[in-house]
Length: 300
Ligand code: ADP
Ligand code: MG
Image (tube, rainbow, N blue to C red):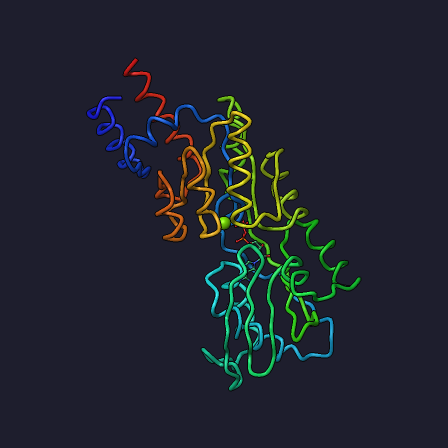
């Protein structure tokens, strides 16, 4: 396309809330035949809420909440924010930064799995089963049952372990965006396949995908695994757009033929992407592809 055509299209996109960084993305987007969507914060609203909590050992709800807050207050993850909010509401006397005098040290993020740190003398882990497995924390039947019950309902379970032992769990729910199913079926009518990749577990991912009408799901992938999945699709000849919002999506956004970041997403994702969907509305995936198609066809 000519520089003028690109400038016109870029301006038109911007006025519709679709920020296209440079002509390259615009020239590639019309060839896209596969859209890979991240789940949390992309297909879902990204404002999870805690809907249940359970204790598996002799720990008071107060200690459970205080310990969990101490860890999750350091995390940027939407699940962490939901857990902190909920735990504070359960503790009417909880003050900000109240860790009952315990010092929080050695905070670590395990991308796509959870977080961990020291709270006083205790070693605490908060995250999914994969996180627990990688630290050799055993997962008992009671825990497995809690997961099965909640994941069937498209909820995500988060475990809390203290000193190598699971002490409790919470379940969070994150509703799908109202336009998600419509966008997937519209893409299908354009002969564009939709795929979900997520760091979340298979059961929850499948339940969410079924709600939206996505048939191809890849779950329990870490950030580099998401990028590998994109590369694998490309070697099969697919031209891939990746839509994501998180730090964990940035390698995949870079690997894709066209990376599209959700406007409400993290700065890292926005920087890694070729296109930014300012309104955070999935309809704009179609707006971007359409804009590219119109620009290119006008040239020919
Ligand atoms: P997605 O790919 O769907 O955006 P992420 O890769 O961000 O999901 O996270 C994958 C999973 O890792 C979450 O579903 C959750 O189980 C776990 N996780 C990540 N960060 C945290 C955290 N701060 N607290 C609890 N769980 C976490
Ligand atoms: Mg996400």
